[in-house]
Image (cartoon, helix red, strand yellow):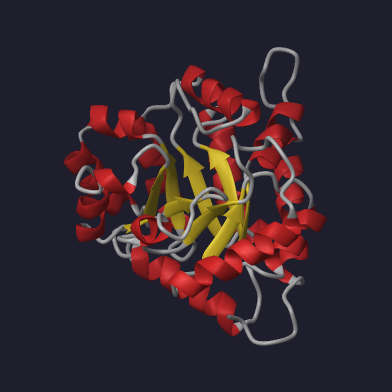
Length: 286
């Protein structure tokens, strides 16, 4: 498969394979360029073999309103390292030279994309091998801005549903959503609280009454045990803040990557993946 072939199809194939194997997937979030370009490249290239089924790659931004402190600091490290939208897309291109199968979704905010030029961004993202977008500050009412052009370009546009998304709002949120639905398990910013698993299960069941798309659950998942509990009811467990925290914990006093940083990060991913991949219920998937 060439780098510019994938998009929605690559995401669909991955979730179809997960369903066939009767297991949930691990979705890992890391920030592009954190803590430096070389270390970030090693992390990104190592994620699939460590067990990541889908990768979310953050686009650093100076005002990440939906993100908690860990991801905010991660973004600042990336910006300090000189990461731009262009360099994010270069990172995807390099990744695709070695991996043509793992779905990769860019997650971030619209301002950097707007500054880059939406049409130019979508063309470049598709060519680089990006499969989808999660743009947290573009509501459904702004679909013409980026969502519809992304879909026309063959990229998935993944929408967030939250505990406050009621039944009257949900159809609007799900309209034009593709790839999968990202359910935010807690009210607030990333990494701020631990999800109530009973509430998450009922929320996933409600979403599945409204859509045939896979549902991945994120925000607040920190441990393999929590990820496994989510995986028993959802199609994917998303872990982000816990991973960027691992990066922070393995920096030296000057903020540079320690020798064991990449191994520590990938070991944590492996522990999460092992729990998620063995947590599926014995019955058929929904």
